Length: 72
Picture 1 (cartoon, rainbow, N blue to C red):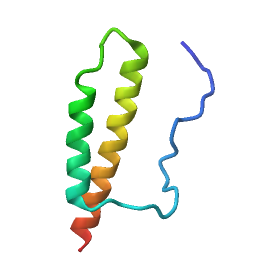
Picture 2: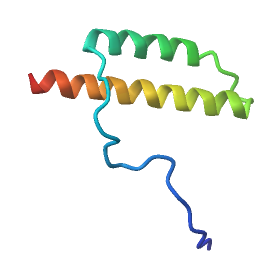
Picture 3: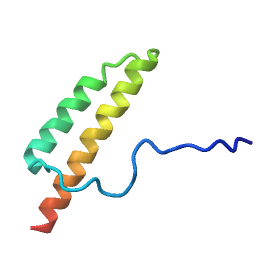
Picture 4: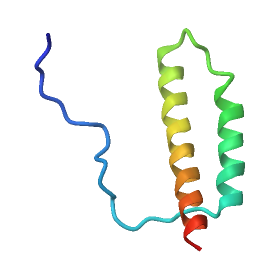
């Protein structure tokens, strides 16, 4: 059992106001990111980490754009 203290990579509370892409731009960017990252070498730790981070960013932008669109 590990009881190490750690800090999360990202705090769940909002970072303040930030730019939210329009939905069409967020969708296109998510599609492009997915197409780029599906070619990542599964045996390369750095490639997998890079893919995970880029996909998380695309997903966050997509969700923010969907939330903004729903608020209209």
